[in-house]
Amino acid sequence: MQVPRVAKPAHTPNDRRKKASSVNALPCYVGIDIGGTRIKAGVVREDGQVLANDAFPIKLDAGRDEGLAHLYSVIDRVMADSHARDQIAGIGIAAPGTMDIPEGIIFHPFNLPGWQNLPIKKLVRERFGLPTILQNDANAAALGEAWLGRAQGTSSLMFWTLGTGVGGGIVLNGQVWEGAHSHAAECGHMIIQHEGGPRSDHGIHGSVELYAGAKGLLRRCEEALRSGARSSLRSRIENGDAITPILIADEAKAGDKLAERLIMETAYYLAIGTVNIMHTLNPAMVLFGGAMTFDQHNSELGRRFIAKVREEVKARAFPIPAQRTIIDFASLGGDAGFIGSAGCIRNHLHQLLGKA
Image 1 (cartoon, rainbow, N blue to C red):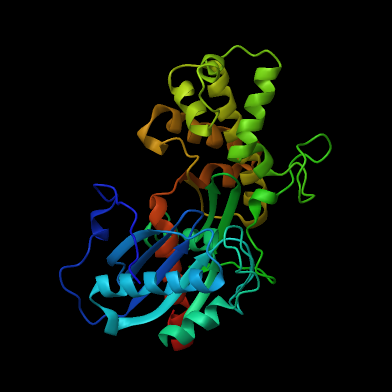
Image 2: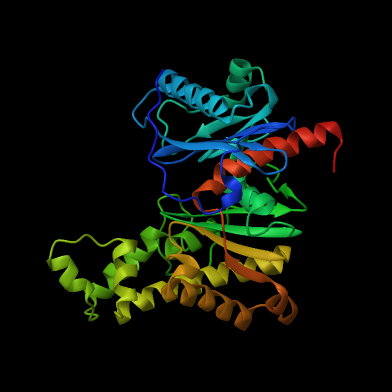
């Protein structure tokens, strides 16, 4: 099967992650990140060198069999591109939705029709004859940051993923904390305002996600405009523009007070969730990644956003963790998922071999 690719950016964020011109005998790991619109795949060597990586459109309307055939062809393609097929030691798969991580079963994938109760670990292992693991996508991204990203060398990490919703991943001493039922680090569903808070279709009312996710940002924006708030967003809407997080960010960068206030409120709500995590786990580092990070340190808005998070955390956390916890943006961008899923199978195989 010929697999179409998603166009890559002209430059990668880390020169270390270019394809290697030659490959030594170190073991290599396939990492797969199944997202909402595409599958990102890569092969990462034991020393952290990314030998190949690419992105492929996902077949959202495909059934189980066609979807699996597409996934297999993606794995075949990236293994071939790595020129290290004989050194592949295992395959890590990151996916959204509820799952049984040890058993490798996806229960309710959000974007993959026909994949309910899918024993994906077993199927991929049988297809390729290689050890395979399944991991939650936010967990995998967290491990990617801990292995090769901003949290490299850090003893403990809380990682927020900011997008349509708000996800999380926790890494302790180099290992993903999965929880007893594969549901640890669902920090976006932490309830911070139950009575009077926004309502959830799933019964988890007043959660961080409902305030700070993209849908929460848009809801707060629409409420403010309905209440009569003055904003350049009104003229944009009258000109036919749809309200999106990008539009709000653009107007904030242009000096619109409402747009800036909405984004700083997002930082405030995330700070509340962060303090709760700090007082529970006391991580060494808290990172923010995903689509709603406002260009991170590359823009004044992004810098003000992370400064607001830090300011609100310091105002509410115990003094020592408030001073010592590193709070910053993640560094791997969209590559964190496939790097982290490769890291998950690497960790699994290290444990089997008794390595530290």
